[in-house]
Length: 131
Image (cartoon, rainbow, N blue to C red; front, side, top):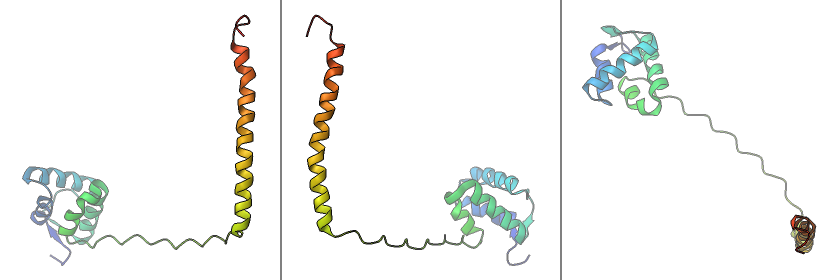
């Protein structure tokens, strides 16, 4: 066998590193079916790649120990995103202070307007004789 070839016994050993005896054979059978390879005495390099892909697709991160045991190369790390550009500088703090003062003055007035607007609606709900 070539360097990347794998015997069925070695395949089972890789699954037994993660699962018990019976579960290893069950999961290996499911992975072989999912990969389209099927059970054989030995697997060529291309078949091993298909098996590894099926392990990663079926088991995700929990199957990494199996992938490692099969001797497959680790998946390439995800590319890092470029850092975002910095936002332009804000206006001087003086302007922010003036805006905050205006907001504080306007907030109580708006609250009073809402109370006044709600009063007639509340009066309308009361029966006519109980004002």
